[in-house]
Length: 156
Image 1 (tube, rainbow, N blue to C red):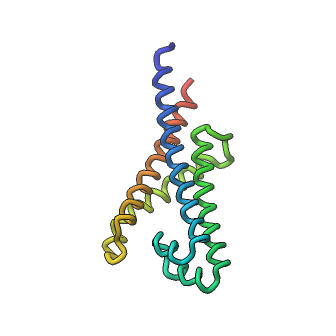
Image 2 (image 1 turned 90 degrees about the vertical axis):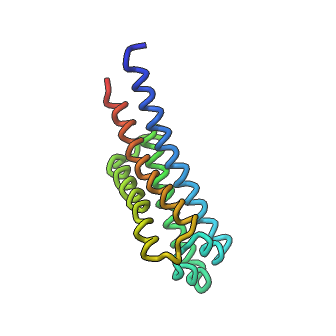
Image 3 (image 1 turned 180 degrees about the horizontal axis):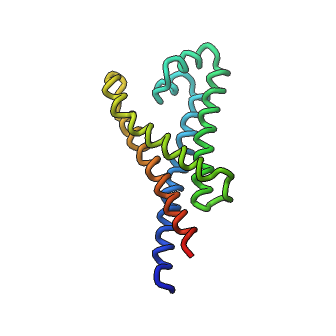
């Protein structure tokens, strides 16, 4: 084995693990959101959906289902780009800008937890704090994983 090859393999597997972890989180989130369509307003409430969406699920369930599906598709797209970056599926077009955008959005979502918790203390739950922490680490993991995979792929 050539010196440095094992380091390259470690970077490759570490990057892939980080990206696959974000993909799993995104797919789980998509499925969680879709469960609201089947389970109704109480599921939306349990997942801390905005009150307007909860009310919409009562008055116009088809529209709430459409909006929920669109949001879920964003999480599925996140998973697809992460799996592509990890090399699990073929390379997607616009992979780098997509990964950067996903990383920024997830990291900002996580960071926003703290100020939002101070602004709306009545809405703070263990779930909201854990979700904020998870999305912060998802953003950092997505960026770091992609960088590790890029370094691995650019090293001769």
